[in-house]
Length: 266
Image 1 (cartoon, helix red, strand yellow):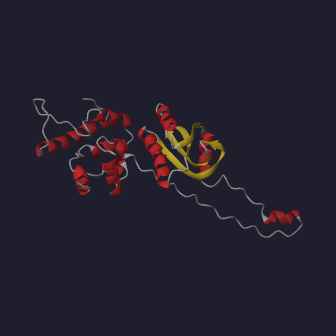
Image 2 (cartoon, rainbow, N blue to C red):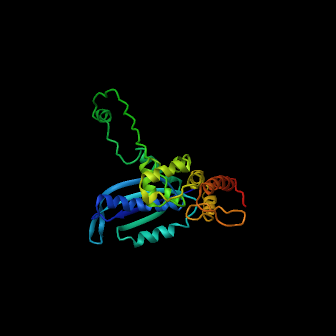
């Protein structure tokens, strides 16, 4: 895996919610492109070294991530270049020293100057040195895990993703552990606008995503229609949405997901 970080400055005239939404937009884009987010550092409001767009300060973010490919970085940077909410951005590749530096910084090992101990001062002035007391070890705060981008599941849009997250379904693993009926109950409870959704393939898609099988997932999604598995009868005609069709779709979904997970082709 290759390591990168992108630092960007958000226009400080935006509201707090707008600033966070801008940063989250690029975190989501990285995740949807297959990148793994290592750390999101909200560095806060800082003074600029020089004026940019009549601004003397900006809200800084730094996102460290890992990826096998760099093909999507040009698209990411193009979106950033067109985004009027950003003052500046910079994407760099990290070598092993850069990765270690960032890890040490998060662990509290870098960034604070050690004060000269009183014992050393007394020795330099000829005074008696008191017994040294070992400093308390600092425990680095663990970065909360970033939620999975559920919109990568074919059939799940932004609104449905919000419904699932509100029900604490914020990861591919949690979605994969649910049955289509359980997901359907959540959608029905969220209102009539979601009742027509068919989540039959969502758990199987989520299982492939949780395993990191992105190529197999993408190949399968190309065969789906709006996240739905097309079930045909013996004559090659699509079966309507009936209880028999639903049962057939669930069975076919299980077979299809297993085949793609094992790398089999029809």
